[in-house]
Length: 85
Image (cartoon, rainbow, N blue to C red; front, top):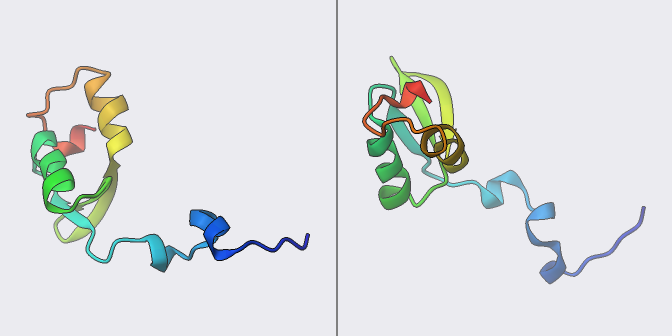
């Protein structure tokens, strides 16, 4: 399929990961509370996700959608550790 788009029409669909990825992602410790992680995501990194670290190893990633569906909608206390999500 030969489709030609102008740069204005391309949007995110044809940008590279390097172009849209954050240079400094939010990195949080597994012992942090859900509330602490949400605060870091919103106010320190202005990010919709955070990488979760335990013993210097990546154990997961949390997104703002996870916060909505698995915390708020399920009534999970925001004082619980992020690993509960």
